[in-house]
Image 1: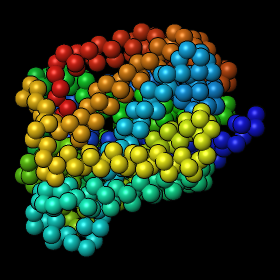
Image 2 (image 1 turned 45 degrees about the vertical axis):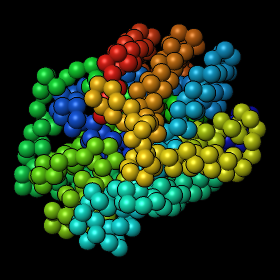
Image 3 (image 1 turned 180 degrees about the horizontal axis):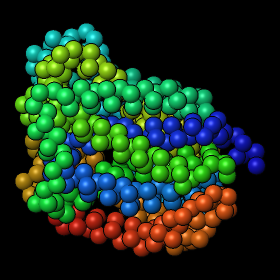
Length: 463
Ligand code: PFF
């Protein structure tokens, strides 16, 4: 092993890697985004499409990213470059996507801290008017000092602090504690929500396959959500796998992480939607779904304030383990590619993304007069700096990043080389290798590109 490789550190244990990668995958995407999308895109039918997307395309791309990272032991850009110098831009695209995501991710992560504090100190105010509480945080009634600046800054500083301690010290230690806790909390809340009187309507909605709700848009939403949720298409899993050794079984790790991540999304869906139906509260969209809407839910259930507090702790944990992974991708690139010093990199990156992120929150509610710059197409509107960032990443950049990864690993580096890496040169068995080859070379790239183009033609619905 070279000195350079040793300096990068490695995960201290196999479990450490699984929990860290699962910690990256499980995040706001599962709990803040997924239930809203499942609700808006047809409930049960969306679940089927989503699971198909994860099983066929998500697992395929994840294994491809793992093989790239471990083979080269490098950050995303250097991984591509090492195997083919003409392809380093593909890794660069991923780092850029991760950076854009982090701009708004830290904002929403900050809101989780605001809600933790809110449930401890002023639950009565939240319950009195949940929507008003949420919008006030965003700036509807004045400058959004807390929602856009103070709490997102705390969240970002925490993320940067963890990253400054390095992989084994920071990410791994934290994930070992937080991930199991997160699972336990989530299952408990899901059981609580599903046993509420009236929850059966929501359960039925989530379990009924209504084919009439399926359209091209549902496929695009499911694909973008799958990539976002599994942290694919932006080099994060390449970077994480670069810290692995040949003793790690990439194939089984892929299966475990995809199953864990999908379970958490489903738990969140089966927690939020039945509870929303049970309490008769109309589900909101996007940010409002997990914040304003759920406040009403917690108010309506016995012991709700405690459940509310637990829930926002959970969301916060999930968000931190994901934001650290994105920041690590950007930092690994700048330190290893550009030779920047790690602490200096952290400070500069944090400042830039924080400033951009502020405008995300500004544009989510009435603080900025955004009427003049709202875009309307096919009856769907979104504020340019808010949902547009999500549109850009989920609908375009992530699928494109995944597309280029499949083409690169399947055709440029070569699928046989990738299978060799996936099995650690034949050390581990991989019965599904023939299927993976077809998925990687043909099915995944074609599906991804068709869905991206269909999405462009169909319009701009972001739900
Ligand atoms: N997978 C994370 C989630 O579902 O919240 C989000 C995420 C993590 C996106 C890492 C991108 C990334 F690089």
